[in-house]
Each structure stands twice: as C-alpha cells, then as structure tokens.
Image (cartoon, rainbow, N blue to C red; front, top):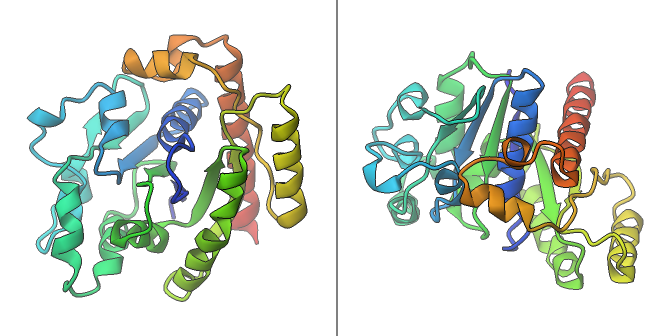
Length: 260
C-alpha cells in the first residue's frame, strides 16, 4: 500500500505548504513518484506550483462530494518531474457544510484513495489546512503517517496537547496512523530560544524523532514566487540541502514503520 503522509498541524504559519512542496520535490529528485493532495481551501500549494485555480475544472473537492470522481480524474501534472498534484480550490470550503450530514463523512478521502489502489505512486503527500475540522479529520483517517511541521516557538508547543488529543481520538477510526516525528521549520540556528524549544520538544516527546531542521530563509518564498520548489530554484542552497535531508529521514522512518 502506498504510504500516505500528511504534513499536519492545526496551527498556521508552520510551513506545512512549503514543506509538502519541497519534501515532495526532494523525493521526486531521488527517483520516487510523488502525488500531493492540496486539502487547504486557501489552495496555497496549488498556486505555489503555478496552477491557475480560476481555470480548474476539477479539484480535491470532487473527491469528497456525494458522487465523487475517481482520483485519476483529479490529478494534474506539475512542472516538477515525478511530482503530480490533486489541486485545491476555494470551493473546498463549502465541503465542510456539505459533509455535515453526509454518511461516513470522515472517510470520504480514505475511500477515494482506497478505491484507486494500487496507486502508480511511491508516496502520497497531503498539505493540511491550519484548523481542526472535518477536512482535517478526513486527512487523519486517510493518512498512514503524520509529519508535524513546527516552528520552535512557545505558542507552537502550547497547541500540541490538543493536536495529540485529536490524533488519539482519530486512531479509533484509523489505528494504523503513525506519527513520524516533528519537522522543525523556520529555524534560526543561532537563537537560544530555538535551542531551548527544540530541547523541550525532545524532553516532552522522547519517543518522537526530530527530523532535520529547516532553516529560516527568504529563498523559500522566492521559489514559491517562481512557482517551483527550492530544489529547482536554488539546488545548492542550504535550504534545498535541508529538505533533501528531511526527505531522506522520512523515507527511512516510513520504512521502519512499515516493518513494525
């Protein structure tokens, strides 16, 4: 079964979208076939890849409605070789209301992915919205693993208790769900606060790995402005190297999890 990895944190501003994009690009660079799903109604990942949402005829919304399209009919190619996308659209915000009284509303995404197996991809990555709602629950039910992007800031640590409470409740519906670890983002390595926050993470969650840190850099935003990943925009940058290291760690962790 294809690993389905969600970059998940209900707090905004943790670089979920750029991490989904750049880890996906790093996996594709390693020769893996990657499918990403943009589950954020803001469609940030979709726009970051240069896709005009005004011209979209289908989107991830069409996987969640009462009479869903097959997954294969919602996939679009991107300018990154080996990296495909199920795009998002602002219409996705309406899905929450439409799903309120729907049968098995929390399993719509899981059903869409299961119906498409065997997938012609090595990894499925999901970009999550910055909220805990029915879309988030769909992601948690469909995913096999979570990566938690986290900015090393006191407020980021404060919301983790609620996140793990939600994950533990959802495990009743999806007992296979594993947390691969934390992905520290926007890291200023010379900051004492950052060092303290990372140490606190290790202390509070000793069983969860800290993935290679992603440094704070304007280059990531510049790459998005060019509608590509940092690996294509500045392949020799420290930011690109960090995402390559994070992707390698995720591959190893997914392999270890699948062997358990």
